[in-house]
Amino acid sequence: MSGDNDSKAVPTIGQRFRGFLPVVVDVETAGFNAKTDALLEIACIPIIYNEQGQFAPGEALHAHIHPFQGANLDQRSLDFTGIDPFNPMRMAIAEDEKTAFKRIFKGLTDVRRQQGCTHCILVGHNAHFDLGFLQAAVNRTGTKNQTPFHSFSVFDTVTLSAIAYGQTVLARACKAANIEFDGKEAHSALYDTQKTAELFCHILNSWPQMQ
Image (tube, rainbow, N blue to C red; front, side, top):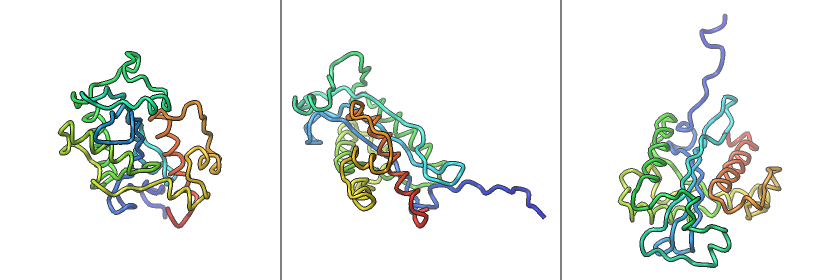
């Protein structure tokens, strides 16, 4: 006799990672010092289960950030990313307005609650770099009470890629995983976050014991 619901309910991420919601994050910056150098872009993608019960990227949240007052702008970093911080076409939001961070944090908090999670945990390629710039911006904007992220724990796709494929560079790890990667699109926070999310999900979905 069949039950009232023959299909399995899609599990929530809160049941998988000790209550943590993995959120892939990438930032583009004007240098390497989180305390002094400008944060220029941020993108976040929560990881959820799809209807087949596999890990999948959720909806992306993204913003261009106008440098905070007194921020250092390292020209070498700007040349590397190709970002002009003051280009009006960026439609950047001033960091001190807090609007971008509040919108992103609210969106992530909504997903966190839907997934039965207690915190978000940052997933990144060299994750502590992204976490450092995120925390510096949180401190400058006074949004510590809004951020859903764990203050120091991370999942790092550099480590996972090295274990899975023997690669630590994002583009090479994606190639090893047969994930399309366009080098011309790289160093955009949104694109790099999308590719890191695809890579993270691919690695987890490839090993049944990690389901």
